[in-house]
Image (cartoon, rainbow, N blue to C red):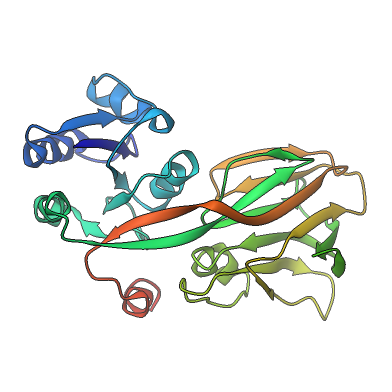
Length: 265
């Protein structure tokens, strides 16, 4: 088998963790993404060039989000971060977990991702959310949201996000959006500090097309999964639909509600 490893480069004891992973993988081929390869002195293979049977991430949710922006391989997340809501394995259980994967003793948890077109040009897919917000502190922007060709909302706010069910437990939740069971294929539009009493989150069918336009040609930012920032002039049109690609998590005991209670209380 061919296994890829992507890791947050400043993880404490990364060299020891990598050694433990390689030991249990035995004679299988191991490839390291660019950043951990530099730290560990390994030959780098960019994750988007990996032809891997599955990928192991070492870090937190950010490491997983970065991996899924550049890869559609199955993923096993090892929690070496703070929250680790999306991760599956604690550091102490690395060997047991990898042995199960090698035996095929796991389940796949598939999640939808967002496909995003900026003026017709595709950018990175998002597992959690795409966020549009003002480029300047204390300055609002005027957003127009069209769904399947009909104007759905028109408001001034600090920003607005379009999130997946996976992202509904992240930034969208903090901004007042609903929690969506990941088995429900839908998108949610969440205004960020709207200057409008009726500005409320809106759950949208997955088959819909959401278009974002700006009523004013003023600078703002588009942030993809908190990992990539794209500057906008305010004259662009951004279109969001469900991607043909899905994020595939390797799970051993999938229970969304137990995970929700454990991580978010």
